[in-house]
Amino acid sequence: MKTYLEFSVLGEITELKTKYKFIDINNFNFYNTLEKISYNNNNYGLLINTNNNSFEKNISVLPFYNKDIFGSFLLFKIDNDDNIISFKEKNFLNLLNKNNTFEDYSSDDFDLSE
Image (cartoon, rainbow, N blue to C red; front, side, top):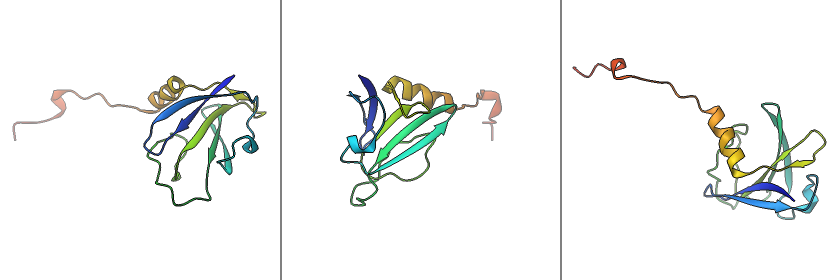
């Protein structure tokens, strides 16, 4: 079974498993839109529900997606033929960490004597 992620409106991540070998929107009744995204030499499938604007705005942040998402959504890692590759919360957090660049500051950078 392959692992994928569900993101709640509040940003909670749940690992789910599927018996399906490839991503097909017809296998996930609640979602009506599949967006395929290439990012850093990887492919992702994002299942969202675009017909229901009554949902709250999702607070989750994806480094490769800058549109607003309402309600929960599903995130899959896929290959070029839409085959599902297991994608766990740990993998997602590693993806976020690779994108955050932090500048190193020392106390010499700030003049506190003013």
